Image (tube, rainbow over all chains, first blue to last red; front, side, top):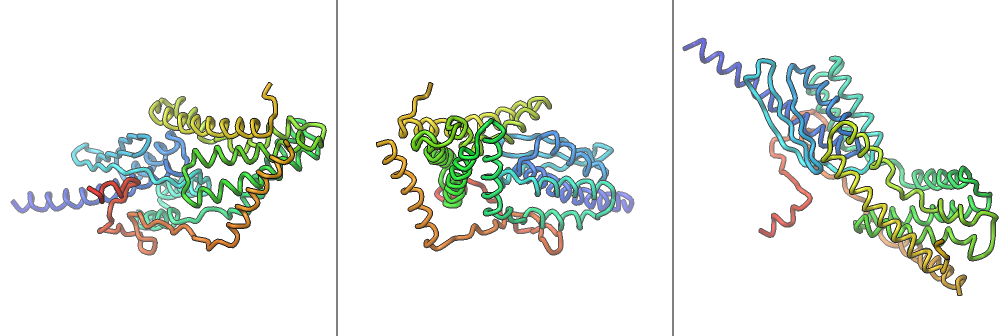
Length: 268
Length: 60
């Protein structure tokens, strides 16, 4: 009887430990999914940490949630949690820190409690400086114009178009406006400003300026992530990410067409 | 005409930027939807579940 009671206490302790680990790992996976990590990365990181804690994970990644079941090595005890995705936008800094945390826990450099504390700090990280992003994105888009053969005047036009469109996008997103409308309006404004070469007859390459003025809106990372999920066999996640990106692309195309119509520029 | 339309649209955008400059800014608060305390790393026991469609549940 005594042996039975002590065994029950041990199992209860182990079960509590597994529940804590399951909550941590599911929260971790939901945050990684929300900051733009691919499914294969999430699976690897969660598996790495779970194995370091002597557990076997079964992870189901859905478009808006993550379901994690943890089993002990003997397959006697399990813990399960479904965590809704924590949408943070594409955040590579957060992504990198979370991956690094998984290695530190797996290598035994941090304890479980320390890992949870670090996780809490990472999940509260503020986004990068919006003005710096605005300037860097504008310079990058102007450089794209040069890569596609645009002259200096066209680069200046693209720089101005991106500055205006990107800032407008930031303002509208801060105000909580629907992202599809935000993309359409930003593309409209950028294409109108980008058409300055046609309107005022300046520069040798107004077509390149107009074409590259909306490149900053292309959802490249969601497209790349969706392809990674496709190759890894996560078809639901692939379809979800691909459709999200396709809808945004359709919205920016609508904005571009609106800009061309407003400026009476021939499409073909 | 084309130039007038271009100037009108750019003027509207500039007006929006100027209006925004003088409008009271509102910082997005960092959401407190976390399991773990940043100081101790311990799980927050009374953590309420918050979903994106929370308002719909409140109406029910």
